[in-house]
Image 1 (cartoon, rainbow, N blue to C red):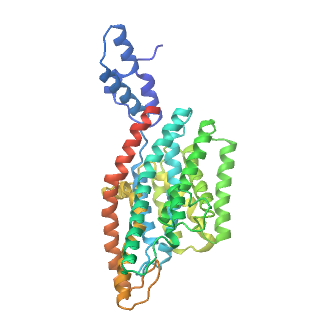
Image 2: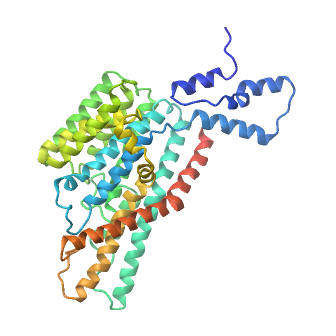
Image 3: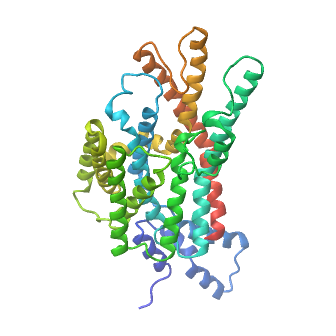
Length: 422
């Protein structure tokens, strides 16, 4: 029996888990052919609107609100982890293990990228679309932060030239060579022994390599369950276990950071490949695995920290359903706000710490207190707590601004360019 007009589009939308608005069906290709038969001439603007409406529906990104909220919480863990002065929490094991939030990012990234592109990267055009979208999602904010730090080094140079500072610009972690490496996003690939400029950005450079591997595998048609997928999962798991055993930690960036990224990304892709469906226990699994992950981060040390990784995987598996206590909390308005600005928080918080420590050190130096390079000595943890609250507020406010002025416009611009390849 002949399928009704728009049924192909509707079935594809249902298969991908998206609702297909019936109001768009009259604008589909079947209706367009009928209008041609009826000698109805459509204006160029109407035709373009029709095409773009269909493309946007078919290529709409799969959205997981609970994972957005988890991304915001993970970004906060990274901020806590990088606090460079004494507080009441900075020496707790939970905060010292906060670097594991980066592994949560890698796992979530692998899952979300696979869910949105696993079945779509089949042609050179689709790969170019994918590359353009990812470039404009990551690089504009990365470049803006590097230019902000570069401007701070210029200020340092001007102050030194006027005899107002004894701090040498463009030295140590801020050499011109490291700037070039950072601009090319190569600092996390083992080519240098210091991250420099904006240390958290190492992970996005490593993720770009993961994107490239993902695109190659997807284009070859190998993005499916099977022997090769199981082998990749075993290699990824084995690599993380080996890192934890050898380094007694997973806090590696330059040198072994790329291995860490590829392993976490692979586990995220595996979640998509072996999705368990709508099992009723998933909402409970998300809450329980999240609580157990926090417990491991609170008490584990050394190689035992590897126990957090399977719990992170289970948490992402459960949260994708969007149900349960953990998913409800992470889907709340505050968590969604944090998720929206999480990339900006991740990218700008170290610069905020540099500014805060630089300004306070200058005051301390005038009073004769000891000076460190990237750490700050405070008289009391209570002062450190208060200072952290101030800096955190500045980071969240600044992240909201950079999201609105840089991140979101660049992402939307990338989408417009990517449509040319769709």
